[in-house]
Amino acid sequence: MAETRARTAEQGRSAVMRRTPASAGNRTIDLAGAALVRARDAALARAFNTWVYGQTLLGPMPDHMVLYPSELRPGRTSQADALFQGRWFLPGGQVRAPGGSSPFAADPPSETWAEELHGFSWLRHFTTANETGTGDTARRYAQKLVADWISTEGNWHPIAWRPQVIGRRLMSWVANGALIIDGSELVYRSTLLRNMARQARHLARVAAIAPAGEPRITAAMGLAFSGLCLSEGHKRLAKGLKLLCRELDRQILPDGGHVSRNPSAQLSILLDLLSLRDALSARRIDVPKPVRDAIDRMTPMLRFFRHGDGKLALFNGSTEGPEGAIDAALERDDAKGRPFGFAPHSGYQRLAAGPVNLVADTGPPPPGAFSHEAHAGCLSFEMSAGRARMIVNCGATKVLGPDWEAASRATAAHSTLVLADTSSARMLKGKLSRRLLGPRVMEGPVEVESRRNENEAGVWLETAHDGYAGLFGLIHHRRLFLSATGEDLRGEDRLDTAAAPRRRMPWQSLFRHRMPQDPGFTIRFHIHPDARVSLAHDRTNVLVLLPNGDGWQFRARSGGGECEIAIEESVYLGSGDTTRRAEQIVVAGRVFRGEARVNWAWRRLSTRNAGHPKREDAEVPELPDLELPPGE
Image (cartoon, rainbow, N blue to C red; front, side, top):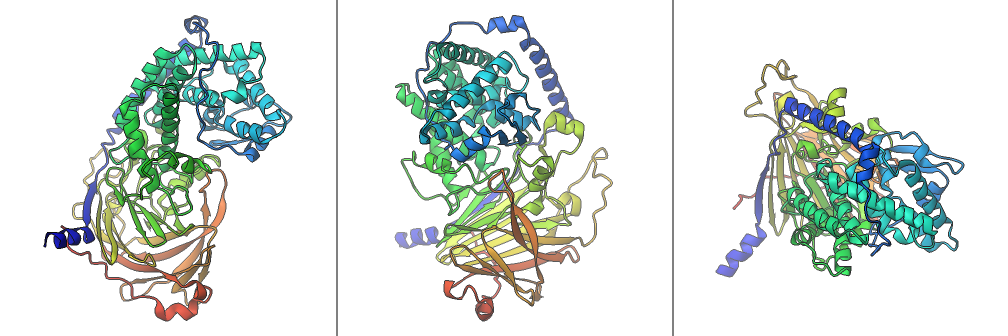
């Protein structure tokens, strides 16, 4: 009897989650605080750019690098060739420096691009080119670039000497030490080591005031690596590890996700932590418990975000990830278990059955200070079948400029419902506000609910968010069901009148806002560019053919009848630095008397009949009744 009850509980496992964001704070207070921080930074920058301060950075010079840590971000020879030819296409923009001119003399298209350039993370491409090539062209060019930087920016630069930039540069220089030091002349080598010590001493003073989030972790990590790899840095190692452990406790959530909810940040931090752990072990230094705990929690979460093609899901500013980086991180995981089903603290759900993996965003935006790359994609989902992605979000880009970046953050760039062409979260737009606070999320869903139930039939997921309650007085509900075979995905998107619309104060911008009556909406399913999309002549169903030959049929209905479906252009930014033309399936409708409902279904067709959608019409399942079984 006890065994029967245990089995029933396992088959009918359910979970109810209600996520509310951390306080976004008062905008006036945030602006005042940011203005004070900016004034402080400006005053410090003037002080740091003086001869007197420069004298305080003098000290013992390291005579060698004790260790070259492993670089877990794979390099690409093709990228090294592009940089050698002067095509400096980095996150934040594109710059051409022809004729062997120094990229450090070019006008940066953005601060992001300048930080990437001065961070030297691109050195790994030259290391790969040097290891795979027959000559030493890559080595000589890399050493020339390092020497150029020391001669032009080695004493002070307002961007290059930011804490997070110094941290990334020191990590890149020690990880690629064999490239930039081995075989070099004595004068160059001494100058390099002396400058690295100078940077490290400055970083020890300012790492704790780096911007909140991943930048502060990067600064702490760079300080720890400088103490670990330079021959005179044991005090900096202790200080860097102390700061790093403090930030890991603040930023890594109990389920292993990062507070920014960005899978790319998750991967980047984990790669650095793994490299630090290996380097500490190589030096026979105990790895701090917070570092070990963070790695143990973050690695399963990385598996959670991984699609069937081995790359990352596209949520909240994430890209697919550098080629080979995810494998490099997971190869160091001793557990190698299957991903878990839901991440309650990070606000994500994962549905897996048969060949299908589906990841859904069921959380509110991250706290304001950590939301500079967050998207308005609440309740969006991505789905892959085998190694082929099918339903995707558009992704994110920092290379193509601010207009592209803003468009990729909008709700319309995600596979979810969009009400009246309005995003479910709003980012700062004012010039002064953005200058002081950055492009953070200032308003969005306050309450996001998700309820999950599993049994032998499949997995049910019921979610809702109130991101449209303030503007339209409506709540978006989304229900999903994935069958146990993974061949049947059913969904329902519903809009209901909010029980208690948010009250606005007289000084708030929406105080006099009048809610529109019966707004229109669209439900968007962005399709990966490798898939082929065909719309039936009667516009009632769509066939999607994947590269592996499998076909999936989509149908939708509203109320008692079929919905008219359209195919529109889309764009895919999964790589982060290029655009690919894609298509999206769009189901349109209109709210009637404060409510609307659309049911839809995806069904996997046999490979043999995937090219003949008309022959499959009779076998399309009835659109689902998604009543959830009672929870525990």
